[in-house]
Image (tube, rainbow, N blue to C red; front, side, top):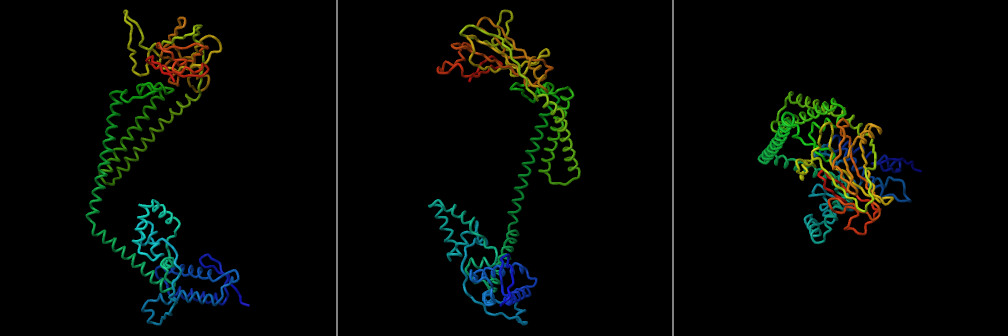
Length: 508
């Protein structure tokens, strides 16, 4: 009865007889002593152990689960004598080498990245089938051109085929015997390849100074172009901002609900208090100036390569200035956001008519008559107007639905926002819409007004017109509801329209 020992070779477990283990242990110790502190010694030992594990696994079967001395000796003979790694001087001083089997091993398919152009698939296939790599590459090119699946096939093989990493895998890829002699030759060949590539790379660097210098010139030229562009852009921003600050505050346009409004007026009408408006303005100035300054420094840095403590201080100062501006924008911004928190909506009926036809007419802010002359131009500039403590906002939405009786009913719906519901309702009730009714003609303003003190809080006016069965609505001598060009349209289908500030009407 022989005693067995449990061992692991590169993570693979085996049961081995005690005598066979002593033989194997002695072999590995001898290999370790021969290699000593040579470069790549650990890698060689790992490769040998992996090869051992592979050969031991092949020798086992369900009826044989223990490695015997005979099996270990056969595997060690295949691997060869560790003394093959001794230098010539070591061999002359007493080292010896024994002949090993020069049998071919079973080929395996790997990717050969050492001789690759892309992924090493063709180089690996050439080793596996014993073909010239040029022929394999030509076959893939022909399949790609005429078959259309050359590239997909190549990338599939690239993904599923492992790369030959270790010396054992490289030998298996070529079908050469996996023993000490072949592994030593493979490692020496790899070292020569690395040395040759290093020399070639160094020679290329030495011999291509002109190319290197040209590349540096191109990079410097690109840096200067980028630097000039950044400086030009920063200077353009600075000039525009100076015009805005000291010459014309209307130079930078702004909009609210589609209406143009001078920028400084917009700040006053949005901010809750005058101090908030000032904080917003100062915050915008600080962030803008800091941004322009950082652009200038960045442009100079691209143009001139230098290191200065003053440059770092300047960048840090501008960043602090920018953050200060952001803080000044956030504080009133939070209060403004709170002022838009809740929406309020109110409604009232402003007209009704018994006729089958309702005619709508719209007046603009310039509609007037003086000395017998009637103004026909609307003078619309698209600018939100302020006059005598009132804000004039143009446009309103119009919607239609079926009336519950035989009358036309016209409702005015006002909406606004505030810090709470009551504040929003108060602002909504302060919205005024001028209108006059003469029988079936309803003349309305194409604009609405609200107190300047209410600020801009998303004030809007909508018209809801309930149309009786058989009735229709006309604007500018054309029927807008129901649509005559869609005769099958039913009255209970809702429709939408919009009145612009110039009195024109659009519908959908």
